[in-house]
Length: 178
Length: 178
DNA sequence: CAGTATCCTGTCCGATACTG
DNA sequence: CAGTATCGGACAGGATACTG
Image (cartoon, rainbow over all chains, first blue to last red; front, side):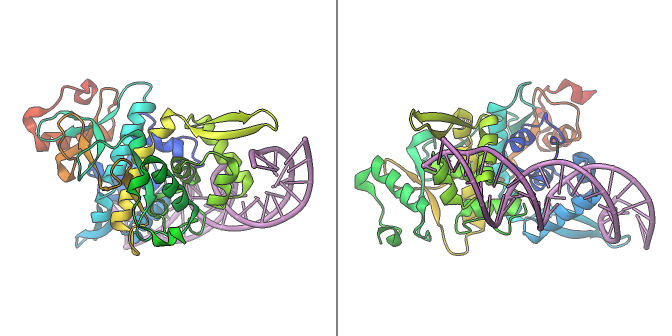
């Protein structure tokens, strides 16, 4: 992160990113979620140098998050649209937004999530899709999944789980026991 | 992002980050969520150069995401613990994890979220805390909040909202109308 | 154990000029 | 409109040595 500051600091997402890392790509995705598709839309919005934008866009396409599609034969014109993986990034964007709004919004909220049917402002929270319970604080831990190797994270996750509920320890990953 | 590849590519979070940007800081936060607090825990886990770890840790403290606390008088020993803002980053981490799990997990899930009471694996989804409705796809848009300025995002958000529900347009931001 | 001190390298980015 | 071509600078990150 060697930009002095992100383009639009009144955006809570940008503010969030300012705290954690790098991220032209994410800002491009953000604009894509706003509905932008064309090179110069991104360029004007982000005030990014054209060569850099090309680079980021190319990378996003290579990573499968965006698709470059010709929408005009002559003159040849292209647009950049989100792929399914790209669209699936939206919850992260929303989570970043919520974080920025709740912790780094000195001047009030500059972006909110809106329910398109009711027009109501949404308060995004994470829940367990199965149980419907809110995911908060200490009730949930990151743990090793079926494909995990025997790393230090697994050991810590296993220990955390054991501390919390000794009788409910799952049987994976087998390697953990070794 | 000029590391060749992140330390542990079997971690879906790392895999996610690989797609979007930079991020030692996030990996440190990840480990903090796993329960790590000490310098050498982070160092061993991340295989990061000590000077870089110092730099990142210092930055995280400066940004208010972690706190450096002395836990031993002599010899002086310090630990790094998440602040409230730091803990609030967890949903983003979870969202990143879910994204990685759902879209970039060629070998199966290596990290999952676990309900500490029941031991069940959690399927994290975003919902509206007020209405309880799932936040998916096209039903929700990022829009300008009360503190927003008259930027292009506002115009696009406004347009999107108008397209979706012409009768439910909110009265903010006033500047938008100007 | 918990860092500090140097030096070096890579690359991400910024600025600018130019093209069909 | 949608980029490509060059050049330069800043800083994140890497390697290594050293300290109380």
